[in-house]
Length: 269
Length: 255
Image (tube, rainbow over all chains, first blue to last red; front, top):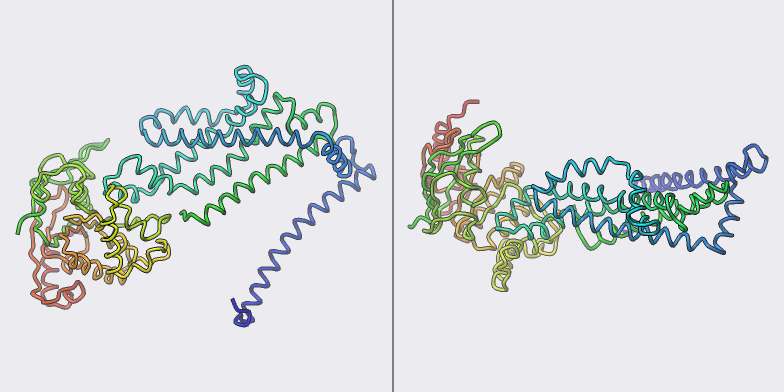
């Protein structure tokens, strides 16, 4: 990469790409700033009712207040529940998908059940879960699991079943066993399926955990939001939502980071 | 010379939900040690099925198969099977791809690895051993796939339309490369193809199959009486077009 070797046209082209990239970022930042400023100004001039809409300065205040006492605790609770639910959902999902891939008979038998369970709104299971597991962290984790598990199974099973038939045939010409087929062809060929499923899973588990916290909890961001709503403290609700959005972004970002690290050491199709 | 592969009255019926299909009917022929035999037939006649049966990937309904004098059923360790697509595993480097069969068959011994390295060196792939399949050209990938098949030291090599996924020019070059490797290593080969020129240019004998249910229509000896034969040079021989006409008539294609 010698700068001297770059032609004028190339420089122009590179500059135009950079300008486009920067202007997209700037516009995005400008939208957020404009939104926050408009919100604050409109609330201050009492054009909108800040009792119902809250306002940025009060959200910031609530955030600072919360940080002093309990924010970290609430954040920690939701984070812990999400990560446990996510890990459980992913590992149980992969395990079940492997069993269903292994036995064509079982997967055919399981198909209608999976379809029904997948389309059932999992919130409806809330009361059952609470009664069976007990009102507490357990029920919330199970809720997260209920929402993410079926999707994981279906996503991974589909990936497994769509593994390149030619590669499978090639392995069979070497008289390969079913276990070898799984470990040497099907799993390595599906690394990108796993990554995709992680990406979907982290979001879904969070949905489940917040739903669970709405239904039954004494702590967590979901609890904070519901509590804020009940006492008509919109400042608290808005703060909770913003923290939740940030947390969701960070969790998704860490999955993307794992993907980047994996693709550096591992070639996948 | 002894028959390395003997096929006796092999028949195959397919059971489908909407009925039975007769694919192969009483197919018999032999392949001798060191020979290169091609199977040619109209498309859809069951050529590839026959190869799958010989490889042990599919069951036959009747008939017997002798490999190296022994009756064979199931996947035989004496057979190497090369498919139409190279099916290299993109997450393994070239070296790991080549020893894939050794790993699966659990014969990844230092001796076999040494043999693989020799093959890679001999056929100009050794310097690419740490590269990944996506970094190689189509022709090189096909050579890697052949070495992967040869690594398990098969007595008989089966080629199933092994070049048909390549464009024409690459195909001519790859045919020449592969032919040289096969002749060098003195591997007995049975190839299925729908390409008449390809069959003539490589084979010692050609088995012509009929339409479905496939039977052996004729077996043709190919002899160019050349000192140094290769798939490109024989195309210039006057005998080439005679063989071509002959097979074309036997195939009796009605489009």
